[in-house]
Picture 1 (cartoon, rainbow over the protein chains, first blue to last red):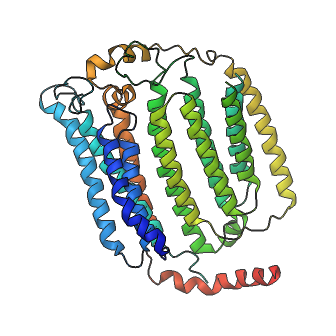
Picture 2 (cartoon, each protein chain N blue to C red):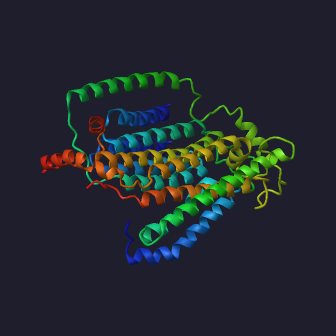
Length: 144
Length: 112
Length: 191
């Protein structure tokens, strides 16, 4: 897949960092404002997808990217499962909300919910990026 | 009541696309339209007249809220819909690489 | 709610365009328009979480669909079987719509839902979980099993995509002469 023109490449280099930061903001404030892990994770994946689309996939080594995307995806699910099982270790139910619930409207409140959001955001971002890379290296119509 | 009927109309258009069309991509588009109709129906059931979004803000703790339960269901279903669409499209791409066409009748004829 | 009417009719027109148009790229763009209209409808129905998620997911769905569509569509031949198929489908759809109209009267009226479980979530949500976003507290605290299942389904689907679209070696190259005979003759007919 070829890259795009010079204008798109310059603007992409300026904007990608902002999109990434915005995605992290939506993931972290999932318990205070609308958003949460799913929407934030897809926005983070969108930043990487923009990078690949603008630069062209021939120059980037996509094998390494696919391996790293799978690693982060498994890491995200592992964090989520770990937080779920933590309730079992303290002798109670499966998904117990055991961290202290602080004051409302603060960032570090609501027990286990922000950490769950981080795990889900990581997993969704890596999964969507892996899907896109798999479609990007495809050579369509290889019969002719 | 008219809203529910219009939502069913969207679902029926998707169903027509799945059953009648012969192009694989049109069948996939019909599936996607059926999913959208389902999300719309779930969101319509949970609406309360005069309510606001179910997010507590300073100074509005005692407001009337919209039902949050269908919104949670739809949030989960949207991401699952994306995953299944990606899977079905990847199978369609593989079929094109193998048979050279997207037409369902041709594929059935070429398979023998 | 006149804006809800207008947006729903816009979505239905977009859906009809998406199904009927012969060009594949135009129908994918029409599906994108239906998805964006759905996102605005979610905003009108006071669900901002869902609207954000639907917007970004719609954009990604468009990227995946456009990557897989080609430039030409196949000519649509009307043989005898096709007419019978369409008539049976339209009959089935008519029966479905009549049954749906009877069943939809049982639902509570639009705008007055019976929130038996949700009223408990709304009252106790802040004090039990400490999160001010009540939809997040429903997803990750009261209904966390559904989120666990959803994460598993996403993981499995991505694994399926990676396995299906793997690079196959030379096995498929030997089958090439059979298909070029068939597609070669069709190309000559079109010209």
